[in-house]
Image (cartoon, rainbow, N blue to C red; front, top):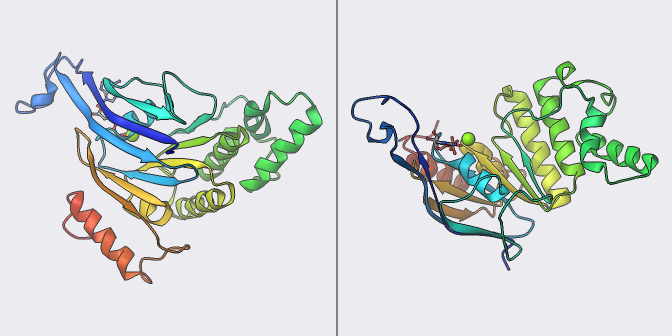
Length: 265
Ligand SMILES: Nc1ncnc2c1ncn2[C@@H]1O[C@H](COP(=O)(O)OP(=O)(O)O)[C@@H](O)[C@H]1O
Ligand SMILES: [Mg+2]
């Protein structure tokens, strides 16, 4: 059985803008219904890492919010483990596009947020160390978020999410705003973490390379209203390399074309 099933998911918002952005933009009239997701049906298997790609503004974050139960679809349903999602669930953890660390708590306290159920402080401290080690932040336990670099903040966030031991990890553009090298390193860490823990992971990104390097499978969404343009399993061995795999490279060019860029850059 699929762990997550999206059945004919659609979402429309009512446009509350008072003025049109441009004269011939039909979406911009106040009171209009703006369809963001259009009849999306997908299945995600247990343990799989699926990267969802799509142009900016197509509805990727909306889709994740609906899967996480933070938002309701206009029609259609989400099932996790056979049960319909009707609100946020303790076993689905969301890693946001922007840092969600609590600024008044240290790294260790932030990571410990998901471990409050462990009564024994020694057990708790051991678990906190385990996850801090997993993301290579040893030595920074007592730092506050503002004392960390962007990449370290993102790693601390990942540790906090993993500490909860969720069944489902949902990441919305997890590398946005990171510098190039940090981005590459974080990407590798997320891939390694997934190989090790095998959590069902959904990653939304607008970065084609991220999706192709990371995903067990990719889903390409169209522009708004988003529907599924391509679903493809990636059976390429890891670590993946475009130069060594002409087939991966060809798929990359195909997706660039699909997203409206005539040549791969
Ligand atoms: N709460 C909301 N109310 C009205 N419109 C929204 C709301 N959230 C998102 N939208 C609109 O839905 C579209 C998709 O948004 P989003 O899911 O954030 O896209 P993406 O993450 O792919 O960039 C955008 O045009 C956005 O303006
Ligand atoms: Mg988004």
